[in-house]
Amino acid sequence: QRYVLAVFYFATNGGAWDQCNAPSDFNDPAAIEEANNNCERVVTPFAVPNQRVGDTSSDAWLSPSNECEWGGVACWGADTPNLNLCVDQLDFENDGIAGTLVDELGALDSLRFLILEQGDLTGSIPTTYGLLDRLLILDLDFNNVGGQLPDEIYGLPSLQQLDLNDNLFTGTISPLIGQLSLLTFFQIDHNLITGVIPTEMGELEQLSKLPSALELLGHYSMRCPHVLYSILISILIRTGIAFLSDTNLSGTMPDEVCANRNNTNPPGNLGVLVSDCAGNPPPVVCTCCTSCA
Image: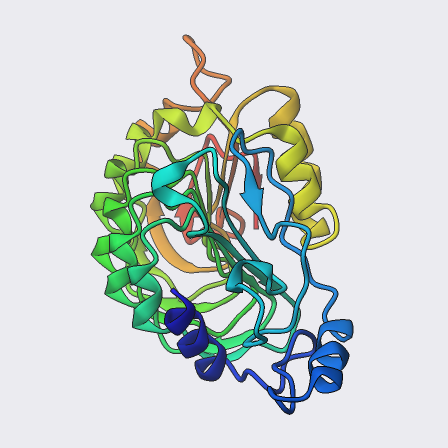
């Protein structure tokens, strides 16, 4: 995994990040100390039940310390022996990350949190990320990642949060989205997505079982204040969230999705539903949306 992280570092403009760049001289203790002092990044503190290593550490990348201690990295702890010191979280926001997402990250099958926000990442999501069976959160918002969302992503059995807003994704939302049975948060607004909204989105019944309210508030209050209000509403009524606005989607919001709104009888789970339903005629006809862009 140290090799995979090194590949990630060099592929994402490592050396020109805002923080946590590698030491200038790996044989000079003073250079290593200086690099460590220039790294203050720690991972987002999710309320996981297991012990973790490195979740409060911020050593420079590629420094001699264990990779679990590098800034923006956290690993599983000793209470999960088969995963002890395996990478659990890779977490960077607004740190000058650029370049492309590397195939090799798909080899980190211990990874639960992949959060690479507010950078200048380009290219597409590698199909190898479909191998991340433990992945709970995939968050790439505010980058320049594009292309079609790989079908392999829709097969991630543990995925709870898919946050891809403000990128350059094209293609359509696949009917395979109905396979993401644990999905609680779906945000793909401000992309170039086309086509219609698949009826299979109505199968996402777990949208009511949000991650911890404190986790969501902590994650979004500083990063994405423009969505915080909707998240607060959703937490208060324990419902789910789907942002589908500012895209090239068209057609009519499927009845199956509207039937999952929390104001139906019997009530469903979906509390926040936003689409491009403004205008005359609107790109998306939606009589059940909470708001229209």
